[in-house]
Length: 220
Image (cartoon, rainbow, N blue to C red; front, top):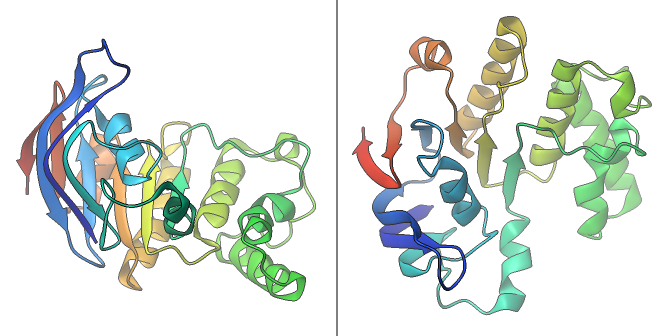
């Protein structure tokens, strides 16, 4: 599903490396916490895994594809198999919850009948079946995060990435979120969650990738 070998990442020609010699693999249906202090490189690693950028050196395989050698035109279909949950939600404020969830399906050209059924099902799954007509400003932070999750998973991604998804949530909302991510993982989605929430990690033990100063110091 995911394999990195001696990956380095730098932004711009003159910048220093953000990630250094990172190597690990995650099989289909795997789960990893992504841990480390601020500035350790967690978000940069998620950018690589989400195909938002390519490695400066080393080898990156995502979804059985060598990203260093793949043509640019082949990246959008791969990205559609990857779900991304952002800490700041990134919902479109002028769209309803339903339309925010439906957006990835519309961009993929799915039939409108299928879009309606799938978006409605996902909103029910995250407990917001009655809030489909609400815009983001009318929802609480926890509800907005659940809409963001529904949007990320509505396309049935093979790989789900979450960047500090509990950072804006209270404890009960964060626990609800983790239950949803765990359910996705149980049905076969590979999940990577970056977090500073040590209590959440303790309640949901799992293998962890630990970064320090852009280097992977633990995978276990």
